[in-house]
Image 1 (cartoon, rainbow, N blue to C red):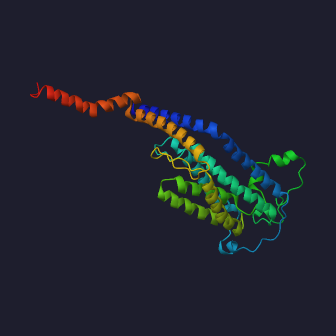
Image 2 (cartoon, rainbow, N blue to C red; image 1 turned 90 degrees about the vertical axis):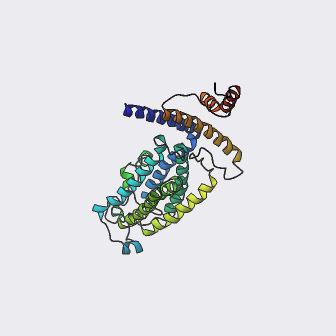
Image 3 (cartoon, helix red, strand yellow; image 1 turned 180 degrees about the vertical axis):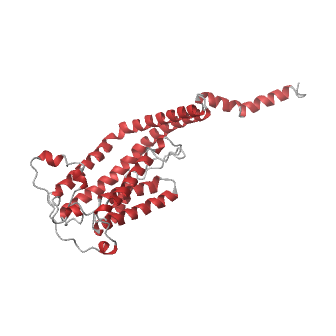
Length: 324
């Protein structure tokens, strides 16, 4: 019975949170869709530069000298770390649907994340199309059949990107690392909106380990990783200042707008989110108490137990001083 009761409460909480997020999604879907479409454009650009790639001798690299080469058989290590970071962030971004600690709305969080990714990827496309370096990865070196792509037979061959093989075995899209873009955006986002300090430290440590593994796997030159570190951090810093701050749901109050330009629109948005959050808190309060008390009825009870109740007691004691 306890499990059934808790499962019912959880289901109602998830349903209430889903309804709130869907309402936000209906309002913000254009920007989210634009961010997702740009992910395809970024993949298309990376596929296109592969046709321009020409293999050559490896460039002199300080990271290659300092870190031992892992080899092809251990190249999965960097991908495993990246997959762990990606899945962990994805699951954490949806935790408000289950846990009581709600510091953000998932829709607004991902709109912010996609803005960081798009800005960083746009700079990345400009950079790797400016100069094509000989790829250090094993399938991009001289003698490999995948190092140079033959001219496409049709536009459809380019548009389909040969997913996922074309993504895993791409060449030429070096400066700067796409894996580090996602990693640093996720880590910085959790650093700002996460609540566990230990996990924040571990996240930054994972980003450092990811950087070293990428170089040791010879998937990127050291310059690709170094440029990603300062470029992505600067992009997130400046884009974050331009975006309106998300409302903090911890105490039910929204943060002030960051600029007077979007003050009116931001105040309207925060008012809608505050009303939405108030209704959800009332619903959760009902579920935690195991009843369906109407809020107006609850206010009446508070009044009966408050000042008005004290006045009635004084009236009774004055009328019957002997307690009879």
